[in-house]
Image (tube, rainbow, N blue to C red):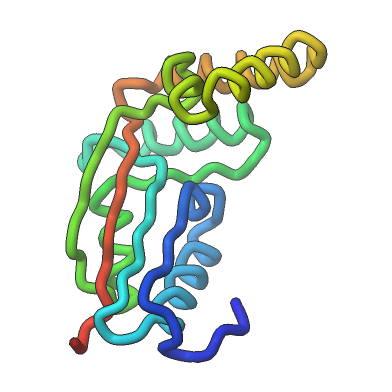
Length: 162
């Protein structure tokens, strides 16, 4: 729980946080966002998504297992239908859903996100830290292996009542 009062916020934003949570924690976090938002308030999430919605369960399980091993965190990306259901189940009305290519760890994306100085700092760290370099290479390999099924998904849910 955040400790914030009920209906005290107009906007809550989550950036790549829910993907790293198990199902129970995902539901608790979304419920907390709903609790702190006023009627008409918006909850925006930007998460790692699986595509298409009809992706077989065994493929989803393989992706989640391999990602968790590669990034050393219990990564649990969902399909767009699963992300929207998660928010709707908590009471949100889905306002928008958008997708973008999953570009995590692609050099052009790192440069755009971090700027030249930040990107060079990351490269320097990878040169100086072999364990980090192996981990990043493993993560990038996993993302590349499942590129056909990975996407970035953004969902905005609205608290009804205004």
